[in-house]
Length: 378
Image (cartoon, rainbow, N blue to C red; front, side, top):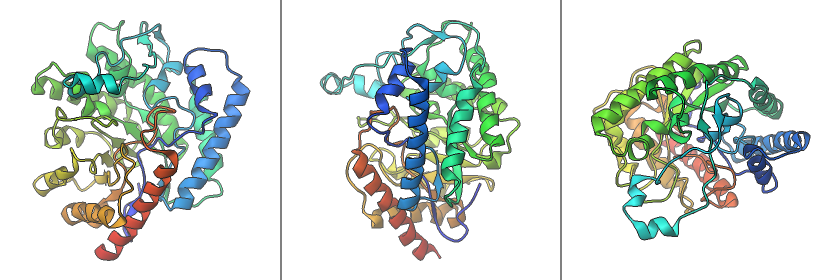
């Protein structure tokens, strides 16, 4: 995994806005409707090529496929794994912070995309889907010169958050079964030569959703379990080839029940990964850069703090972006900071809170801010 040895490198969290004509095809496939698979595959391949060009044109250093072929960063696995059927509860009741404000909850109510439940033994049965992602990305970056290329995959913990367990006797058995199955996808990404990003919002967002009624101690025990399962799945991949993303939920809301970064960073640091991507720009978490004043970052870790808010259409000023970068670089060392985004800009296809054109203007501000920070730090 590259480090910022000569200047501050830039990246993003993973998902980017899908083309309008691709969105209904992805949802139709996820819903089990009949889809022209050839048409879908061709459109996804075109979209990946286009999104790679956009990322390189805006000056991003570490890029990906924008998750063009996935309906959602976590639920896409339901079509790749056995054992999922019917309709599960999903995130029943919604986040605890929003439930506390009923009028606001009603105002933001949206049709819920049905998610299946685990009703049988889990195994990875569709490696062709993962290899299609890899082939599309390899073809798209063949003529480009990014510093590095990554591909995202759902963590066992976040899958358990979105896809209800109705089969395994315990949460631990469910998460470990998911880890064993997802190891196939993780190993394939590594074997293809890409960085693996494992998406782990469960380590933060899980507190006010999956374990909202649990004690903090119980939540932390489950978070540690999720990391242990993840480490099992990563056993054959060097940590230097893996980065993880944790967040408190990519939505505009109160977020006053978010677990503090200080409470979970120690657990996150036990993951066998090099890079840790997290929210650092929104009003609820920007102040937490100070956590690293007294928590020493291990030498083998790199921070990828969000310096853009992914839920607002404000375009951050490059000087503000630079200030945010410099705060972290001053504490942990400039070479161990890569500038990122709070979360994805299209966590689920067609659900972007930020206008697609504004997304690219914000990413331009990211690269400009990183250049300003680099001039200050070097």
